[in-house]
Image (cartoon, rainbow, N blue to C red; front, side, top):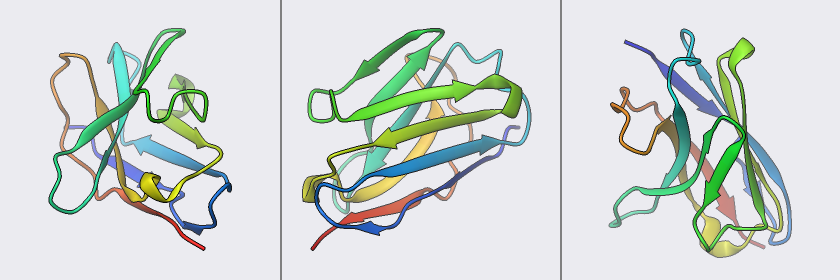
Length: 115
């Protein structure tokens, strides 16, 4: 089974930027769609961005601020986060998306947006 390790989360001020990385323990090139999810206490995990080939999708709340990318040669998925807002505060996870079989969840990476 593929292991996922997320990193790059931090405490950042509103308006700041972060780049999250998700490294898989083996090739993810066969996984058509990969995504980034986020979860806050008491709420369900939410898919915020996904990528399939050159096509990307974003939930409205992050559209035009977040950019998802993947590098299959490095077994890595990235999430570039710009113009961060306090409501972006969450634990961020990556996994397969859009109907693909979910992999085991990683530990996630905490993003906190606060002044």
